[in-house]
Length: 169
Image (cartoon, rainbow, N blue to C red; front, side, top):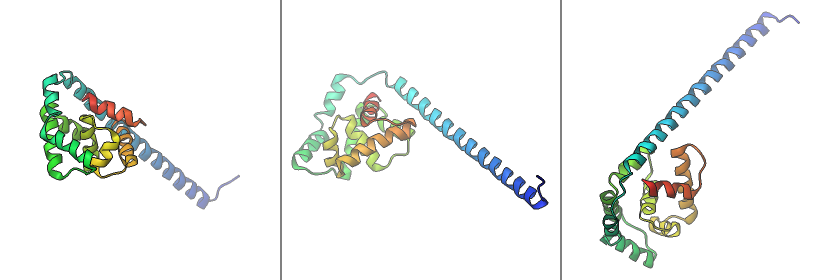
């Protein structure tokens, strides 16, 4: 079978196109792998920094702080938290767990919802109560938790996997 000049030209164009596409996909995958490796390195570094767990007295002050007591009242009333409460909770958590917020934001550019869910996990609020405090559904909170695990670690994980990670840092 002999190819005409036109067929040969089309064959060469298609071949160049597919080779270029292959190279672009390969480079994209390499960048994704590098990004995931960087995140994993950050996580390992954070876990090494977190070896010194705060003492029980510091943690117990968090659970008797005004913001924590107000959160319990909100749960009794079925209300969500306001911006001032979120700022106060951030300060309280960062005061006990040094650099907690900074560590979270270094892993992934979180939305406000992502961050709020993670904060509440850190102070051991139950998922159904997180839904109330953030004015989202239980399904939305569950989706947020599993999505965050996937975004940070690059693999599928359960909601419990994200909770365990948040409690470890």
